Amino acid sequence: MINLDDILYQVTRPARYTGGEWNSIQKDWDKTPIRIALSYPDLYEIGMSTLALPILYELLNRQPDVLAERVYAPWPDMEAAMRHSGIPLFSLESRHPLKDFDIVSFSLGYELTYTNVLNMLDLAQIPVLAAARSDAHPLVIAGGCCTFNPEPMADFIDLFVIGEGEAILPELLSAFRDSRTATKVELLRRLATIPGIYVPSLYQVDYEANGQFKSITPIATEASPCIQRQLVTELPPPPTKPVVPYIEVTHDRGAVEIQRGCSNGCRFCQAGTIYRPVRERPLEELLQAVGELITNCGYNEISLVSLTTSTYPHIDQLVAKLFQRYEANHLILSLPSLRTEKLSPELLNSLATHKRTGLTFAPETGSERLRRVINKNISNDDILNTASEVFSHGWTSLKLYFMLGLPTETTDDVEAIIGLVDSIRASGGRGRSKPQLKISLSAFVPKPHTPFQWVAQQSEAELVAKHELLQQGLGRKGIRLFWNNPKVRRLEAVLSRGDRRLGRVIYRAWQLGSTFDGWSEQFNYPNWLQAFKEANLTPDFYAQRERSLDEALPWSHIDTGVTLAFLKREYQYALKNRVTPDCRYHPCNSCGLQRWHPTCQQRYQSPNQSRR
Image 1 (tube, one colour):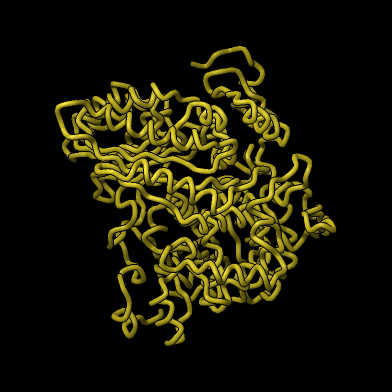
Image 2: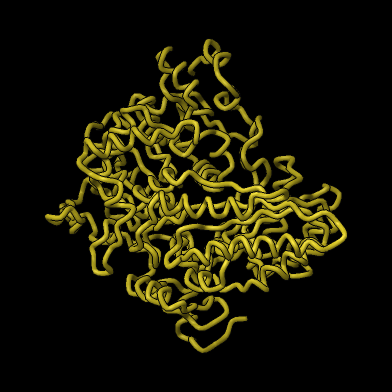
């Protein structure tokens, strides 16, 4: 076990690195043959707030012959102390170096953590480039939403898991058990035959003379030309004994995933594609899970997690019964991702009569026209009526999310944000102080596997001008405005729609010192510009170039289940301000999932049946 006594006093928040938290699992290292490091390429406080790692941690540690331990990216002060003392990156549970594990698995949920992946491998004394790793090194794998365009990280990852870990990991582990004496090349070829596994070294990428992506072709018989996303038909029970941190983390509360997927069809939203269809957990299972979380972890605040929490069919009953059943525990509920048109008076009444957290809504735009473009068919009246109801039930503040730079956006659409925010604030009523509003502004980023994957991102100058317009219109008492750095969003757009050549850029940016690129105090844009220049590439080629609907895309070999024809149709509908209804309550939209998901097959066969 690595001794940290000589360095922990030198760093901020040393409890990030000590392990030993409540509910952490430590198996006998010498008696457990398969050892997996679950690596999250960001700070402990961020990684401990996610749902993916607790699910995998419990899933893997249930296997008698598998141990799974956690590791997070060390902050620069800890990194410097480790490098100075020659301490390799280690796991929290047993403090074994990552290089001693059989598998090092990364969760890729945000493009601006890519340089952290490289830094963690290097700090672990594992070769950063996959081609430089031998049979003596761990197998480096990655999963998460960013892997739906795996190409920018293809130089560094041995294999990608495309889809939900619950569906893929059992077969991956079985193949790994059966191949312990195989070479890494033999192992990768074996694993490439598993549905949902993508091994980039088994493919050749070609480009057109003008630099555009041309094709990606298997160069091994085991490699499939198309990698189909894997998913579970029914969600397994949620983890109810997660590790409880010693220090405050970003979301310092228990969390239960009440449903997975979203059928709203917002055209900018990648999650709405890669997690569909909607799969709901039974009401009683959720009531029991919350009780187990309270007992096992001591939390009295629980977050009901979903892409759209208020669309869970039994949300009113769930909230009312949770408050009733766990009244003695002084339960506080957090409901993220609420939709204004789905927020019932019954739900508000339940929340209002108990201690509660704040409410957050995402109108996304100020104008109804632009909301139809993005397929968020919510009227201003819906938003204002909901705001009025919220304030009448005692809330004195709201957080609102808006996006700038959406396709077809005009100055009128931007000014409409000012008008809508003014109306929301006015809906707080007369005769008392106006409500406090937090307005979060974010630049639109075109994402793969969405109807807007072909769209150009607006320039920094255009976005800044729109931000300044909103600052002038909203810069008053009672309204706090938060704005993302447009350079960060530009880099996100580059990495989200990049091809395999970006590996050279990521590698060079890391060599120049870039890590924690999503953190304002660490973000170094000149590093990235230099890396692009040395690679003879430009950010604009990836971020600000509109693609033809017929252009080959670097992620074309990844099949989410949603067809390209459907995405093209949705893009054309957007240009016509045409709304596509939610397929949970209207006939099937034939997105493609009806080909292979049982629920969607049933709905497709009965297209005229309403499911209200």
